[in-house]
Image (cartoon, rainbow, N blue to C red):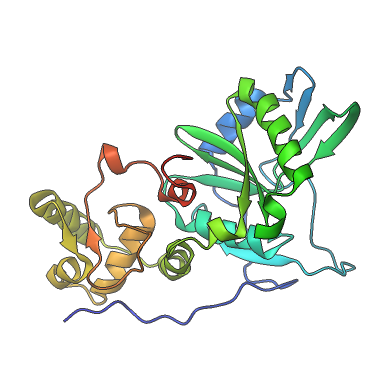
Length: 275
């Protein structure tokens, strides 16, 4: 019997360093959004981007007194996401685990007029997938529906709509929905697990033939040293699809990639009526 590999969970922490700082790999979808918009004006809205695909401001410093979070990210090369709150850190873990999305924390400065005054706002994240682009502001559940947060969000959604960019306030409750975050933490442990070309080809052929197999069934066909790890790495890479709302077990059902499953699973955090 093939069981899911056991891994020791690690906590993201404050003011710590987990990774070296090599240059991250190119994120083409983010670069395309930047190139399309440039320094954009849409009526009373202005978007200022950093010089590279990094942060518009730094949130971690030696003199900082507030707790900050560092999240190691792997999908586009080793890099660190620097976050101001636990909710933002949780969002980065989810996004890094989700194939088909690119993201950047502290991505841009929005200057806009609201209630007769010029104001500035730096969203926590920008999230880009092939068919959508959104700024995210991550808040504790009790903050997310506050009056001023709602009014600012309504204003920014209206101003960003002509640029085909969404704006979303993401609550801690949404980030903890179902088993998405639990599964994301597990999958990220296999981000660097190597998969041989023969195993990838075999998995694709088997799923195409059967239509669906459990993790245990697929891993049981491999003759590699660590078949369960191979399957988990393929899930991380997006080579196979699974229902992320339910906790991953050896009996979780895998499906081959298809058009109706092509939407990155992270958007399902917000429900079908809000996706």
